[in-house]
Image (cartoon, rainbow, N blue to C red):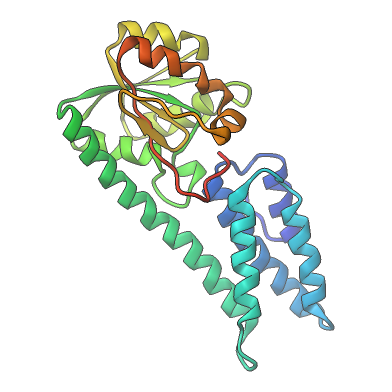
Length: 255
């Protein structure tokens, strides 16, 4: 899907064609670049019109904190533009910086995740995933799936069991597709089969959204609002003695 206008970007975010905290923020940043290009070409008070486009994007996903973080960063950068600087070039550079910083964060997280898996076990592991936190949801290789990709290259992944993740089926439509494309062994299962898999498949790590838990469980308000489908796995992991989850940053409030 190609978006050449801010209206198209807003529609893609609102319709959940773009999913994932990072992908939403990055898309919104580029959307503001497209908006500036169009408004500047129109002439007149382009910044007032640009603010309307800002509001359009902000209204697309009211629970997506990364969206508002990226929009605010773009506005703050515009406010600091020097008198004779090209505002379009400045905004484009800022959007690219947001994108590249996310790509770099993915790579760092992948390396840290591999080190954590090796520290706890050190051999090939069975992993259960919920949702999608891969390349389709970020600006790079993915957060939780980025770790799984890196761990697979290090021989630390035996098999991945991907919850279908209702109601949007990110697990079956996105996660499984990404993993299969990388040649990583993956099986799609119904969400309700998670407990049985934890009991019978020797799963030691559970990747949910952007987190990795190992033999412990954290559930805060954000978890309850945004990962209802995975909360049921908390007592199951505790009962069966395993599990893992990758920890998001403070701005990752939407998946």
